[in-house]
Structures are given as structure tokens and as C-alpha cells.
Amino acid sequence: MGYKVAVVGATGNVGREILSILAERGFPADEVVALASRRSQGTEVSFGDKTLKVKALDTYDFSDTDICLMSAGGSVSKEWAPKIGAQGCVVIDNSSQWRTDPDVPLIVPEVNADAITGFKAKNIIANPNCSTAQLVVALKPLHDAATIKRVVVSTYQSVSGAGKDAMDELFTQTRAIFVSDPVEAKKFPKRIAFNLIPQIDVFLDDGSTKEEWKMVAETKKILDPKIKLTATCVRVPVFISHSEAVNVEFEKELSAEDARKILREAPGILVVDTREPGGYATPHEAAGEDATYISRLRDDPTVENGINFWCVSDNLRKGAALNAVQIAEVLVNRKLITPRRQAA
View 1 (cartoon, rainbow, N blue to C red):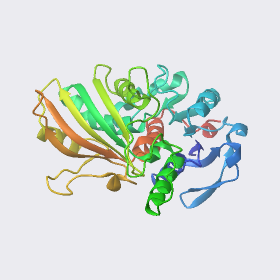
View 2: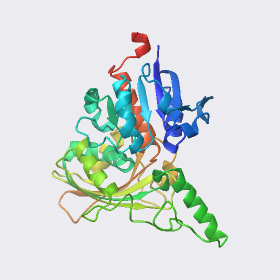
View 3: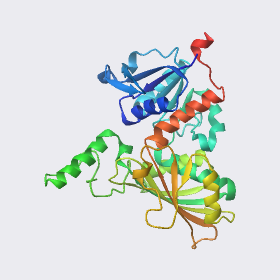
View 4: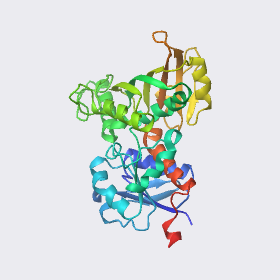
């Protein structure tokens, strides 16, 4: 008998992507249930070649459900994840609510899968921020080889990271510019069409934004608390995929050529790096793909042991939905959970 899986936030961008990936990867589920708020009850969503009718989260009984993949925002997760976990169902949460909780493992399977056993404290596992997920996939094999001292990263983050309304705003503003209509900014503090916004999330007292703080805190928790990291996060007029320009300084010698060889063998990574026009990955190519793409690898001559590279990944997949499903696969493959209905 397979597992019973619930997807909370099934009508959102990430929820729909989770359903798609569960079907694509043949996750061993006998039953998949789509859940959302009452206002979405009865909405139909696709799951492989099937159609699921959305049920209401607040009336659903999780007592025979094995895994809950949750992507409904921090406030929903804060209220419901402990309740669901208390019913014996393991919650894999996409929001920022539990990422810094010391009793909740923050997992990227290619990087720190062994830390997953900590889920037993609260029956909750956190998914990292989308910009962090792709970064640590790239940093992990390099850190193992030469020990990272410091990282400087500038992100170029797509609007889908801010949800469906943000994607709609980019589309609406772009169309308005072409037909000379007024351009309204609702979701973002400034116009996003044909523009860049150097602010993601709220500002903190030190002048950084919460998105930048998340990248620092989450990288330390997932990879190594000794790593120094500074980030500048920018929203760009791209629908899907986040890009990052990354500068890394190591304790030991590591050339760009050595890094290229290491990354070619690393899980979850695809190196696309030829020094010619178009010999690199862009957000367009990464959209809809599972890999984290690495390009523009080169030595940094301004520090003793440093390299630069370009990193691109689909934020709805590796940055959210795919990573969540991969966490569920670790639970199953390592036999950390068994189907509850079978046990009964």
C-alpha cells in the first residue's frame, strides 16, 4: 500500500507545481488530496491525467494522512502545521514560518539530507527560501572541496516568487506600456515592467531586506554556520526562474577549472559554460527544468582563493515544489515513515 498525501495551497502557483511533480516523478501515493481555503472548495486542479476537487483545509481530518506538502503562506502554516503534525502527519512546509526553528530541520536533499531525522521533534520539515535552495546546491560540493570562507551574492529574482498576483502585474503593466495605458503598481512598490526593484520583502534595521537576511540565516543553518555571506536581492521582470551572480572565497586553493569538474559531478547541477555568445544558461532555459544551472565559471583575481559563477534555477520547482517532493522522497526511501493505513 502506498502513502496518502495532502497538498495544502493546491490552487496556488507552487501547489499546482507540487501536484504536477508528484505525478511526474511517480511518487508512491495511493491517494493525493488537494486542500485550500473554503473559498477555493470545489475548484478543480490537475494531478497527472486526473482532476482533483479541492477540499477545505479547516474541515479535513489528517488522522490517516502520511505527508502534508504545505504551500499556503506563513500565517496558515503557523496555525495549521502544529495541528497537522500532532495528528501524526509529517508536514513539509514551503513558508518561512519554521525555517529558523531549532526543532525543525531545514532541508535541501542534495546538501543536508541526513539532518532530516530531526523532524520527529515536531513532525515538521521546512523548505528553504527559493533563492537559498539553488545557492546551497551549488555551494555544497565546493565547500566540501575547499571550505568556503565568504560568499557575495546578487540575485535576479522572477516575479513568480511573489505569487500569481505578481505575475499578473508584470503582464498587465507590460501590456499597458505597449498600448500607452496608465501603469499601476499594486503588488510591488514600483513599476516592475521594464524595470528592476532592489527590494524583496521588508527592510530591516541594518538596511538589508528580510529576503537578504533569509539567505544569510538559511545558508548558515543548511550548510555551515561559519560561512560569511552577504546578499543583495533584486526583483526583475522575468516570470519564472531566479538567477544569481555568486562570488566565493575559499580557505583552500580551488581554481575555476577544478570547480567546474566538481560541479559537473554534483547532484542536481548542470554546468552550461562555453565561452562564446549564448554559452550560458538563462531564466528562459531553466523554466520547467529540475536542474540548477551553473555558467560563467571563472577565477576571481582580486582574492587569494576565489571564483565567480552564474547560477540559474526554476524557483517554482527546485526553489519550492521540487525540493518539497524530494524531501518527501527522502522520508520514504530512508523508511523514516510507513503508510499509516497499512500499519493499521
